[in-house]
Length: 87
Image 1 (cartoon, rainbow, N blue to C red):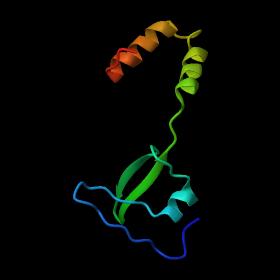
Image 2 (image 1 turned 60 degrees about the vertical axis):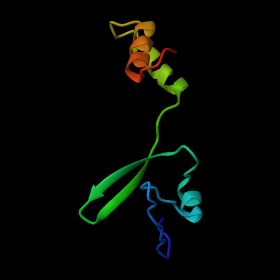
Image 3 (image 1 turned 60 degrees about the horizontal axis):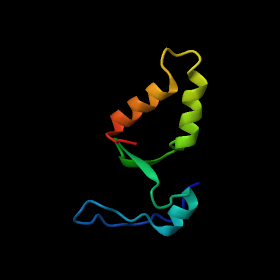
């Protein structure tokens, strides 16, 4: 799963890096992909985060509404409040 040759990138003045296209393709990194940066004793590790879609999240919440004491509308309101949105 690792490349034969290490890739080199540069940190910009804004703290950004460019992940080489060969590695982006290999690991399915597209624009908007979320990465977790984990410090280790050997350096930094980047881990792709797989977040559920809004639809999948809503399905998960709906599946639990039968056992929860909150309605789906109450959960949705709390999620929007936590996000700071008025949706």
